[in-house]
Amino acid sequence: MQNCMMMEWSDLKVFLAVARAGTLGGAARLTGQTQPTMGRRLRALEAALGQRLFQRGSAGFVLTEEGLAMRAHAERIEEETLAIERRMAGAQAGLGGLLRLSSSDWFGLHVLAPICAAFMKQHPDVTIELLTDARLLSAARREADLLFRITPFREPEVVQRRFMALDYGLYVSNRQRAALPRRGRGLRLLTMDSAFEELPDVAWLKNSFPEGRVVFGSNSREAQARLCAAGAGVAVLPDALARALPGLRRVERPQDPPGREVWVGYHEDLRYSARLRAFLEFALARVGEDG
Image (tube, rainbow, N blue to C red; front, side):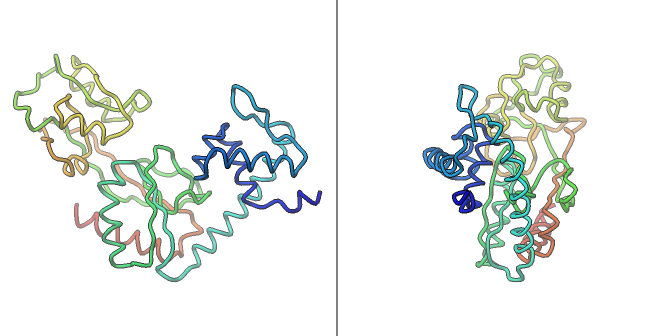
């Protein structure tokens, strides 16, 4: 029992990361630690508790009955700890400290990075972390402070607003001069991978060129754009991305591909964070000027 009383929040973070990821490697990526460190700390935690928290097997790390009971308690502790962190971060009045942003890869590189550079010139005491991840990071867990998505947030504790509109266009390599076949016979299509085939622009591309053939799919818009610029095929791309890369030419169509909206959100506990509010106002002004 004495060992249990000495348990630290960092031990519980390790436990929860392994429980959520199911592997030491996945847990290491969640926490930013190395896999051997995660394994060593988990073994030390189990030894301190005198309980096996996971079954190890080919399926990965599966919670034991004792581990399931501990997870419920650990998640309640996590919720309260993170609430304290959010409240303290939201109460900070100065324009210093860390601000974490989360977005897709191309949006972070071509839209947010220039805004970050300009903002940090004005506010040198603010440190920014820009996380470009296909995963939808959590505002409640403080995985990010400001999150940018192309769909509205569903979490009730997230304060959100429309950030900007994204116009899309049909693009080819600027070396390609021949007219596109009307129904796309022989046309090579570059688009999203199968996990995103329901997106409006994917359907638009396939409907516009029903005789074309999908030759490349990726969840990275940047990868699609670079292949398109290299002459590998045609792609529907956000105009903001295409303008930032050389070698692309927009093909005018009777009807443009459907656009999207970008939403920005943050946890309600951060509504009074001076650095968050200053960055958001600055970013909104910048995209308004560019639009």
